[in-house]
Image (cartoon, rainbow, N blue to C red; front, top):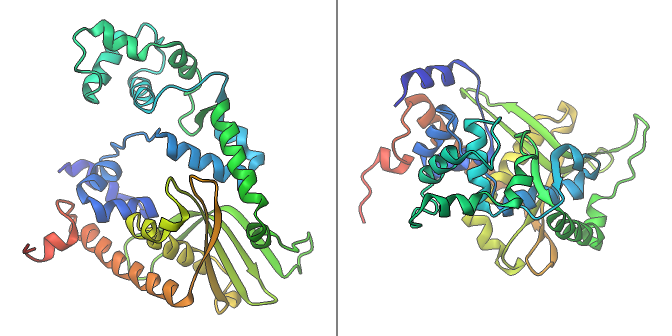
Length: 325
């Protein structure tokens, strides 16, 4: 354990997101590495970038050029991109085509292409024309790099989503510029809230929610792209703990409503597009959302145990009792 890093972490305020809370449940030691030691691996996986791109094209296409750099050629593979970002972390000023030592060091750290016999063969895997072009576009770590093919494919997905009649009905509103408009809509909205009697808060970016004052109704939507079929989405919710994300979003929206709106009814929906380009809107029943909310409370108790005890050695259940097989 790194006491200095711990003291720095605990000296500030911390808010759990879905991803950090989910990581804590799965592997407290990995949470410690990523959030306390601040030694987090940059995620450049293709499916993650494409998911963010579809979200942008659906909810805020006007910000496309703020969030993405579009390269004129195909982007390198996921593994090559990780090496490029690793080299960039070490020295952002080098020419990637001559940064042999840094590339070889990064390859060894990632255990990539180590079966090749010669360093020259390893370098050839990284120092490609595509990598040279990509290198010029990664100077801003807050912007993802995509190619024209990816943009075209994700644009098609976004158009299919926005063209679905159920989605149109869900996202449309009669909102006007008048202050007395009964419907307010919010897209890609960053929200944060404190948690009573807990030493940390919650935060997240909610894909879409709508507050209808006339109907006293709050509708929250989460857009998901999946590499499986919509028929498998129920299992996907459990596998990725999407129920936890839904409960966090509901909590965030509730805490950020005006006090007069907190007695409104809540509806949660997943908008899902699968690998076959099928779009379906999954309704979450009030009973299920209530159960997920209770599950969030239990999860926050687990998080509080790790946080207050400063024990990130094992998952909670292995710390509090002997697990017998």
